[in-house]
Length: 279
Image 1 (cartoon, rainbow, N blue to C red):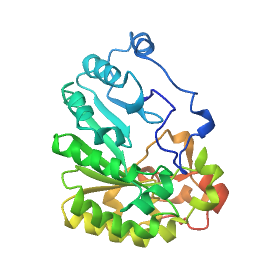
Image 2: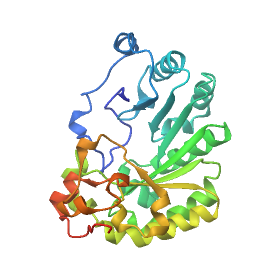
Image 3: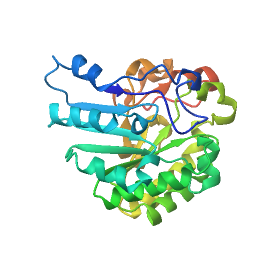
Image 4: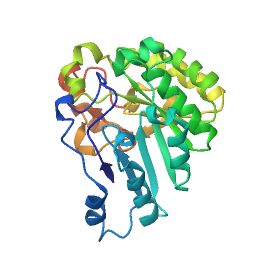
């Protein structure tokens, strides 16, 4: 279950799936969640997101609420991790003893120039990488997420090497093809790159990471575009199936049930000529 707690963020990402003008659209408090979940007894998965959830004034209390109410649930926190560059914030989160908490940390580049070309927030690369490193040292389960766009796709090999050298201890690395909505739709000419152009760089990045022992997943990479060797990395969907679609060609594909499909807006902007049924 998705649990957005705020639309506000301390980054101004060019690829955000929300419009920045909607930053006040979501901003709920702890009492709201106590009431909303009062009659829900069991949840298998909980995804706390935003905006940037860590800047919510009741962030820790909200995480603790879900941790206590659903002690056996898988809790995923999606964050840019800038707030965790402050060790005090990491210690506060550690004291909650949320044993099933995973942190999905987004990184866009291997250096300040590439990362901040997306975040449009000076200092965000240093804070994000420092925050991730501090969380790793504190023993948190970290899943790195690399959202791929025209800005960074040709640097995926360098990003993979940076992760291997500087962010050891992460449990998993996920490459995600960008959803074209919100700010990303407004800036689509600067961001959209064809899936087939991305793939050679993805292959190299996956090889580098797996050689170093990382678990790697690919989200929203249609199987017909991947070499057989990367089918094992198919990670499925990050969102509801209503956001994706299959082409007429997909109807006869043997791997359709395993495939993540294609972002709807991708087909509208780029077309569907890349996709071929697996026979």
